[in-house]
Image (cartoon, rainbow, N blue to C red; front, top):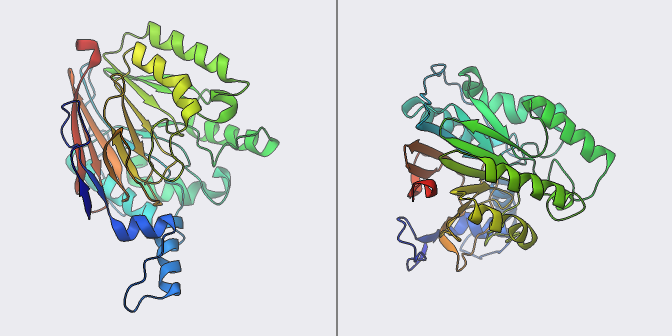
Length: 336
């Protein structure tokens, strides 16, 4: 495992860079020849981690319904991205989410997009949502949804429009961008696709976002979108989205923003006060390299567990065996 010095100059804990080499490199397409290695083994490795075609067993766990506590000052929630494969990796992450609920109940999951690969949500609803998350669904957990690029193409089409409508209908959401208040935080869900972020629909969404941020009285402001403005992974930073969104997040006191799209975990140092997290390893893995904005990065299956208590937020990245691979504590910018 590679390591390099602390990448943070902001005094935030957990600022290290690591990469789980076999997984990250194989998923990224780099072949390393080892004794006894074969092309077949490499291809199987790629399918296992990069595509998640292998069938898995859904979690068979009973959870206590409504076991969490949400108040005006506190909330516990999870974050998950790029999880819609229906395969073994997704089931492993979902199983650990259920186990985590048993010890630290949460009543909300923020989905960072790409919740249905290899087909439409209506065709794959049972495989990619109901089966893996049945324990959480039965416990009454709520879900917020940012549309991903596998649900929305970067160009308008009838098929894309139908898939968007199906996803919004399944999750009962008013549109591809909206706000949701949960306890002490307000979640600003954005549509980071090209048409609605930086294309013809961009000005309308950005005007809406500025008004929503300016009028929010939430102690914690949280962003949620699919394409990451900051990423050192396979797709990299979406600079047009960064240019459109980051100035508003910085000006109006957004504390943290969660994204997906790249299939790894990455946390930035604060960018004008905003911490950005890529949590796109809910089912597949691709490489991550690290950049000057990186505080911690790994290519490993994971989800996030976030706890807010007053002006303090504890953020943890948890992998399939329950290990915490990264943890950071933030102070609310509104309290500064």
